[in-house]
Length: 82
Image (tube, rainbow, N blue to C red):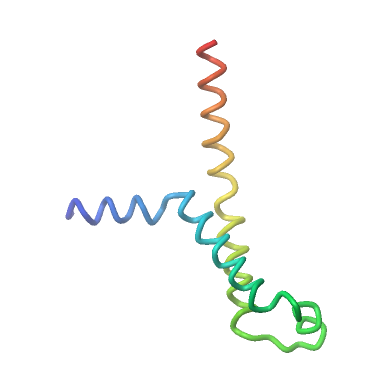
């Protein structure tokens, strides 16, 4: 396998990248649909930005467990040193 492909794959599967992409998608979609979100949901007027909002939430939810695990490993390692 090509070495650059392994690096690209590890970057694409990084939980911090996944969380960042999720927040970018979420804030972009909220900026586009934030003022009419509840009206659109009650009337059934769905657009592409609503799908981007759901995709951003899915990215964020998917990245939560690995991020919490990595943060706990950092704090656990620091408590072992002291």
